[in-house]
Length: 208
Image (tube, rainbow, N blue to C red):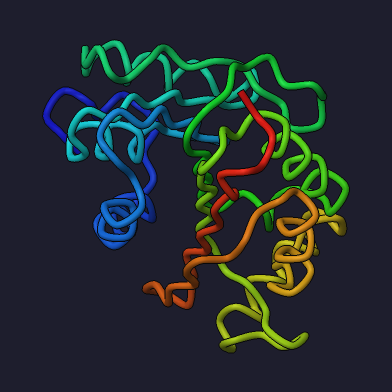
């Protein structure tokens, strides 16, 4: 947390994972890319990444209830490549956004219901430009199994709070991505039993 930000929403997890995530973003983002972040939360990722990635424009977004602190953090940074946050609910299609080169989302798929995850991929399919990339960070199961005891406990806590949430299976999520015209290009092991999944859209795919 920087000096003067003590009154803003803060996530220690964002502080812990932003550098490992940034290392993956550097491999897949290019100068001039326009990025849509889904579920920006506190805005800590948006601020870090737009400052560390040269010539990348970053569009944060969140549901209405999450916009207040996010908007204030963006204003305080004052970086012209960090755009004012927009209200975006993945369940409301079509999304009120333009086309983007990159869609990024962290720690959202296990919070959303499965039907909302399906709508997220439909929304990405509609807006991602040819050659665009989708990067998703969070915990995933493989072959129907948890990758750690801590992930199993986390999943149980999620489902106790909301039975429609829970850690998603990689195979099921990748199936949604392939149906949206995306091909997996990297699956990266991350700290704390998380993964970064990176998909790319073929140059011949639709989009504008």
